[in-house]
Length: 171
Image (cartoon, rainbow, N blue to C red; front, side, top):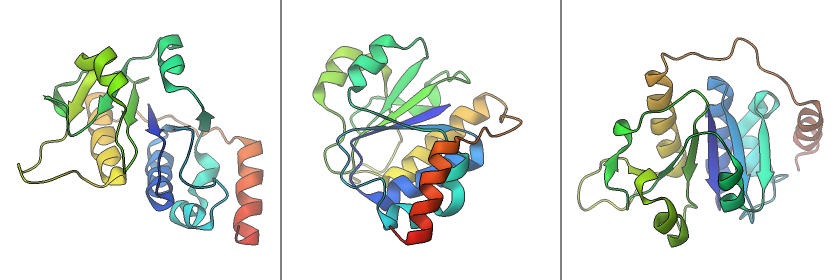
């Protein structure tokens, strides 16, 4: 499984999602532009030392990425009409969340309307926190796949070196 964050704005949310990814063996894709530097100390602090075990990829064009993938993908938005528990997740699913401030662009809704899901809330609610939403959906996807976690985490040495250097310097 991979979580995709479309133009995330709040480093602490992304850091918390890194922790969730680390503890589930899931990957993370960040779509540019980001509202923060990946060297941001608040981002590192929220993710603590969990960065080392997470495969983090950064991309510029989500639409091109999705057009080229063979993996099933799902969007999560308060505008979705299907409940997130109705999706049939596969072990290689991509779970896509919009930015905290702007959500997902209408283009995706127009192109892939049948792939939009929502987390039920009371009618007067706006939305859940991004990190909370990602955790709720990821754990449902993992539940459907019988919590089949990877046996061993593959450490991306270039990421681990960068992260450890940044944490050590407080960057």
